[in-house]
Amino acid sequence: MKTRRFAAVVSALTAVTLAAACSSGTEANSGGGDAKVLTLASVDQGSIEDVVKAFEAANPGVKVTLTTAGADQYQQQIRTQLSSGTGPDVMTVWPGNGNPGATYVLAKPGYLLDLSDQPWASQLPPAFQKVAQYEGKTYNALFGLNGIGAVYNDQALKKAGLTAPGTWTDLLTFCRAATAKGTPAFALGIQDNWVTQLVLYALAADVVFGADKDFDTKMQNGQATFAGSQWTTAMAKYQEMSKAGCFQKNPLGTSYEASQTLAATGRTLGVVQGNWIIGLLKQKNPSGTFTMKPLPATDDPATFLMPAAAGAGYGVNAKAKNKDLALKFVSYVMSPAGMKVFNEKQGSLPTLQNAGTEVDPGLTELSTFVKDNRTVPFMDQLWPNAKVQQTMLSGLQEVFSNQATADEVLKDMDAEYKKGE
Image 1 (cartoon, rainbow, N blue to C red):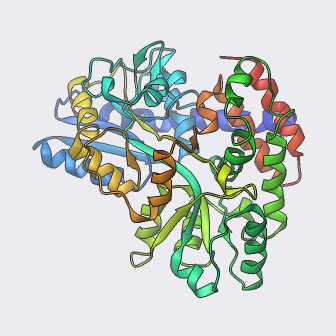
Image 2 (image 1 turned 135 degrees about the vertical axis):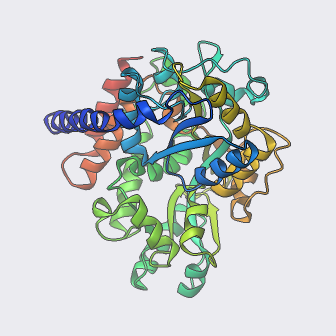
């Protein structure tokens, strides 16, 4: 397995080098020293475009040069661009330490501008401050709270004559019934490897953290491991879902984009994803309604938890060509007006009070879980380095292609975790 991964890493690094070489001219010249031009690199979430339009409208004469990419491609490219001096003024930055584009990873080498003096920084809830900061300084403008769960196409459910399952046993029955009707339960697009984690996180919320909310602390203290814990149960349940026909055929050959189409058009009954997908599904099916519910991993609803945490935010390049304009954009994103545009378009919950965001009705249960403190952070945000998550993502793809076992993946994750920062 490690040989295959080494080859994949070499291939990825080659692609990054080529991508950086091809894009450096554009990035380096896009600002051109013009104080009215802002360069912005963002993960393509289908919502940033509206925020850019609103920002430009609020700042006449300002032009935002926007580039977007999927999460996998973006994470490969952004550090290379920053290290070579060709990075954008403002960029997507994930909370915590879980991936190559996360706060700790980019702040530690000095790539991000300290935003601690911005008015909104002290207003972030303590849980969000923890993953927006590095060594006590704030580097990430976190505007939205996201959750992970099962997002159902309400019309497709009704047409199939089925109801969303409320227990683990019901879930397996639901999947078999959906398959029998010719409409698989959930779309799974793990051709994009970041998608592989979502079902696992939803299951782990119940079986790992439902049983032990202090599991992360025990991991950090060397008192627990992935391979010797309920993570093995979460992995087994993920595979059991696959065997029960919970997903469409060939998930490895299905992209994130294609999975959206399957769920939006009713070719599956839903998709296990973050709440941000509701806005994307509505773009593909404007007349559709979509509802997020917890993905049950046990038969005791009283123990159900949902993964919920700050979603990706925005950081400012420490060497931004237009620092003032970059700070103005981030301030707009964190203002009530900007947050309202972003949250409502993305389908996320606001991180600051009094944002005036109208929450999508499909997120009622997520809002309740957040209010009742029945959530756990996205698991990777508190891991000591980005390689733990990357090992998990590539490993899960190998599990689905029968090139590795779940136990092997968990042991490899333990090995990376023990290396620390």
